Image (cartoon, rainbow, N blue to C red; front, top):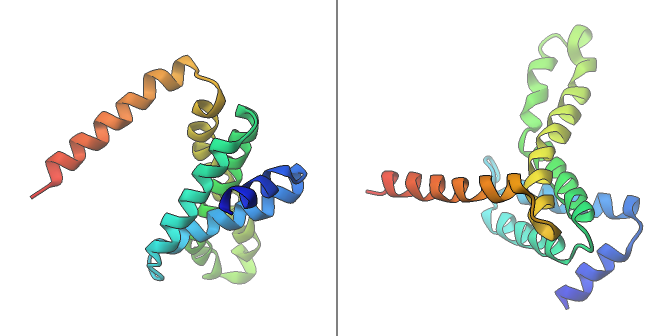
Length: 145
């Protein structure tokens, strides 16, 4: 049932996929404070990973990662507009550009790590991914009580 839904999302034209994928990324950000809906984050990240796994090409997986990451960061970093509201007449016009630029820019990090391993193995991915696994395990071991 879920697989059929994922296939229907991927079967759409690219521009009609983007709002759905961005919405899934935005749902993933609901686990952040003040909402703290961590089950929504787990479900949404699972959907994103499943979409990437079902992607037809590395390019499509890269696009899914970028759009989902942009949706995630648009919600998670929505506080970024508040400093622009201090002097609204002078700086308020920059707030949407700041949020859009930050979310799309940070979404590139998701695109890199989602697009590379999906359908093609690059030298850079093969060299970097073990480092992050070792780093994460080291941090976990050092911070356990």
